Length: 153
Image (cartoon, rainbow, N blue to C red; front, side, top):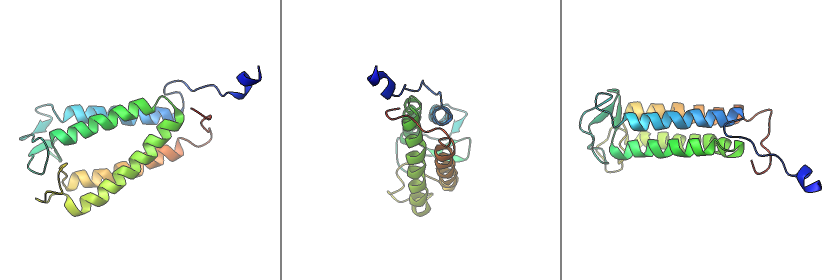
């Protein structure tokens, strides 16, 4: 009986606000990753990787097959992270930090012909990464307030 009282009940899938936030962000990444492969939504020659890709998502964001796959993987992780509040918070905060680092990286490589621009990135991608960084960290922190995730959740 004591074990049952001391073991916190696990949260359900996307039950808490932070889990819902991770789920929504994950789904958006999945949709963006898929859209990157849809002719009409993405124009130009979609290269595999590198700055030679002329693929443009919505005519604004430079994409490649690698870029789209990264979005799909990031989306899968977000949906999976929505299973637990602690995982959802970690996904949003760490994901936001990753996008902040990517923004810094993009300041030096976006739009360049350098081999370092292998994802590829243009200026619009770069500034979107800053917005994503701030938004994801904010969601991870704000949506986690008030209700702490139980240990193991």
